Image (tube, rainbow, N blue to C red; front, side, top):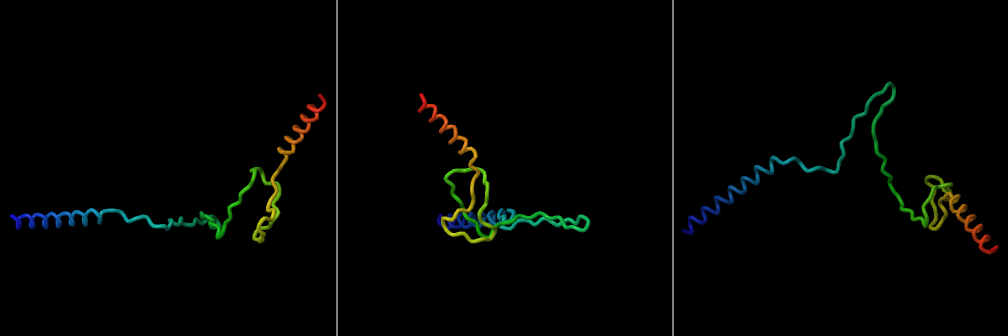
Length: 111
């Protein structure tokens, strides 16, 4: 009885291993980190190709308030010190709100 049991377990293990081997060979290879490179196309005297630019370094900026950049105060590649003013935002909307608030204050004081 014990001999029959061991033969059955061994046969089951061999069959399971064979099944695993056959099914794993038919699976496609895992995707790698590489990206397929599109081929370049000749257009007259120019070469047309697609590309993606990835910065070597980047920095996250945090602004108290969002808005439209009115002026950039640093040049490309220039080193800036911590806390330095890098850009100015367009404050036309804030100036208009301030003018309205001042006008409302004058009206309230006049009454």
